[in-house]
Amino acid sequence: MEPGAVHYTLLVHLPRLEGYGTVPPVKNGPALGGYGAIAMKDALTATMTTMPSELLRSLTWDRGKELSAHAQFTIDTGIAVYFADPHSPWQRGTNENTNGLLRQYFPKGTDLSRWPAQDLLAVQAAINSRPRKVLGWRTPAEVLDEQLRSLQRAGVASTG
Image (tube, rainbow, N blue to C red; front, side):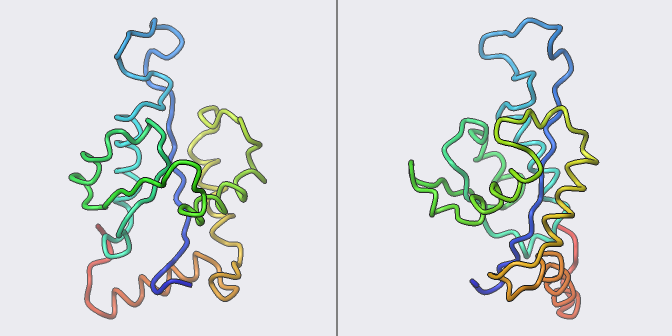
């Protein structure tokens, strides 16, 4: 296990934007389906800023267009964004493992926008409560709790 690795999963809810299904799409307009770069940046920023900044060093992403606003995300959060090389899933090992865990709850191709945020949070809690070999059979929630207690003992604020 890499030092300080928590392997805690945060699921980001991307609801459909106002006008989805009723407003005709506009070329180069907003992605009303909720999957556009600005919607992703905003939702990811809101989610990541719930965590202590000391635990957020970087984010490794695939080459999807949904994070094309990565520069603004880095400015807003201070979190560096790295992109995996094409066809190199080993560069995103934790992400690939998490995708496998998520498939137990949501089959591949599932439209996650139809699930309310509460359901996604329930799946997030379930995944973070599963012991992991990489964490010495502790759960990500336990490791995160240890990290938070360590930050508090060191006198570091626990919010970003």
